[in-house]
Structures are given as structure tokens and as C-alpha cells.
Length: 84
Length: 190
Image 1 (cartoon, rainbow over the protein chains, first blue to last red):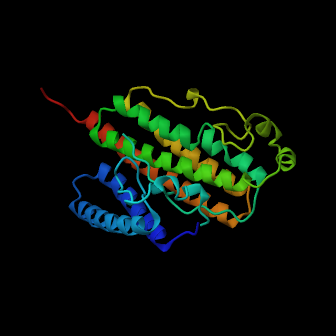
Image 2: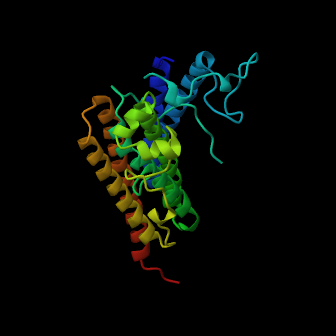
Image 3: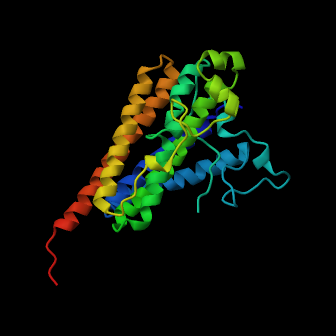
């Protein structure tokens, strides 16, 4: 499978959130960082939805919806099978 | 509870198969300063960590390390997937092939299996955070030695990213250590 632009964008936004998560653990009183975190979190949800419509569910256990007509979890490629 | 996300933290590419490099890289999968050691060390220290911020940090860094475990696994898998048994033998992976074929296994660069003796949990926040900072610095150094062992620009890109993540983790753990020490040094009057 080809590496998609949406996946690249997802990885960028999620990386920003990982960094902010660590920063906020140490600086939980930083209102500006909390605002950035929530802003990127909204963007992440938007991108995830966009990605999943085209490439299938990203997460297990109901954290992603399945397409109604097929259980795509077993047929979409695993991260180590993608040609980046 | 952990929820799996079917994606890597970063894209992982290799320019060519390289069995020798796979043999070295596996140490960041199952070696003393590898990602398995890191994830298990931090996630396990949480239960006796008294400081709220440090508890959150151990959870969040431990979780990112699980993601890095998958990045290293993908690198190793991509480097060995097209190899023949003869090529594996020539690259010093004959004994790995005998025991595991091309399956990944939690071993260091010499094939020694992972052991819990690689990690520590003292139950003392200063001791445990110092252990975590040292672990991050050892992982950073290991990534540098691995970068020195390859000329594949795609592999170097991934290893450079992982090296920088260890620097960030070390910085956050240093800040947590500072917070814990500051609390210990304040005079408490009852």
C-alpha cells in the first residue's frame, strides 16, 4: 500500500500532541499549552475521520467505527507492510 | 487499558536489505537499553511513584516507547524480509535463523535474550527517576553508535529521530526529578 498524505498529516499532528502531553505533565498550569493541545486534538479528530473514510479504521475496540458492509480491520495493511 | 492505533509514529523506509544492520538494530528491540526495556521500566515504576506529574510522565513516555518498539520492529522486518537462509548465515544471522527463521525476537546484538534484570524499580522516586534519565542517555548513545554503523540515509533518518526522542524524554525526566527534589527540600511545618 502507498503512503498517503493524510497519514503523513496525521503523524505530524499526533507528534505535536505527544510533545504537548509531556510538556503539560510537567507544566500543568500552562493555559496557552492547554489551548494548543485542544486545538491540535480537534485537528487530529478531523484528520482521523478523513483518513478512516478512505483507508479504514485506525483503532480497535470501538474507538473507530467499522464500515457497515465489511470488517476492514482484517484487510487493511499493517504499519510494517506500508511502502513509505 | 491500551488501545492500538494501526499506524506508526513516523514513516519507516529502508533503501536496501541489510542483514548486518538488522543484527545490530535488534538490540534496540530486546537489548538492555532498547525500547522494550524502556516501556516496561516506566510503565512498571508508576505504581510506587508518589508525585502526580511524574506518574503522568511515566505513563505517557512509557506509551510512546511502545510505539518506538513498533518502529524498530518495522525497520528490522524491512531489512531482513527478502533474505535467503544463505544470506542470513553469511551476515552472522545463521543462529538466529536456526531458532527463529525471520521472526523477530527480544534479543540484543549478540543474540542474548531480554531479561528483567535490565530494568530497575527501587520504589524511591529519586532513585527511579535517576535510573530513567540514565536509561534515556544510554538509549541515546546506542542510537548514535547504530547511526555510526550504517550508510543507509533512510535508516539514519529513523535512528536520528529516535535518538532525538530520547533527548526529549531525558529532559522531561530531569524536570520531574527537579520537582520531586524541590518538594523534598521544602520545609514542612506541622
